[in-house]
Length: 377
Image (cartoon, rainbow, N blue to C red; front, side, top):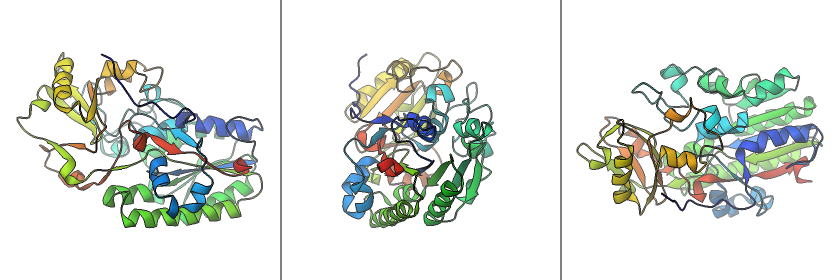
């Protein structure tokens, strides 16, 4: 079956290639970025390029440095666990194996949260995530590598899975983290400093990216990044990007899957996330499940079987045999302003979330790639 999936902007870079290109810069060679003495990579969780452009008046510093070509294409699914793993390993999900927000452990009836399942479901950070972290490789070669993030993440399984090898430095606020990053980049020639800023994403999920609270968070971020650009030492390259964008989905746009619903017939496990469901079906039932979903949801979602998604290259050019069964048998990628919830679950708290992401729309998948410091010159 053929699909009309969204085309990426012709100038958009791949988020997966960002860190390898930063390392090219630090080696003194030209690539995506100019050569730099040290590099700061700022990851703003949840800041899509469309979100930023729509609120340009509240982020005058950032948008004044964002040309039309300054865009990156994040991964599929457009979700934090998959995107950060691709960013910090330099490979696609078909190789590293973090294929979504919640994904099935083959041979089991469990689909752990890929951000927190290391602690709650026993995922092994050294084997479940299958690729070598670039920070670990570079640190072993003698490069100063730092992760500057919230202290609660210092010893998490996800940190070990994708950021091991780097020196972790905690900072309570975005401003503190960016100040620390500037100091580290100044003190250590050749350093790669990764800064994680999750605050805007947290606001977006709880209040929506169109809320006053999100706008206030964006204004604070813009001021903090302006300060970073002003205080960074000469020769320090700064890159600002994101893992995904965000779509607001009000409660009346939720599609609730309930007992007796034909859409969950022959489905053993509903995983993924509300904008990108991963359905694990009974043996041999994937085509029938996909057909029912297409009949019901084709006008507002892309419906693909696992084989179709892999053939379309959504998980990269290569999907390793060990990774393949982690992907849902049927994938439901929302294109309209809808979100799908398994209402059979007792926990209704996730249904209070407003800001959403995970699917293939430009709003979710295209992120900024803003050059500051030595990279802007």
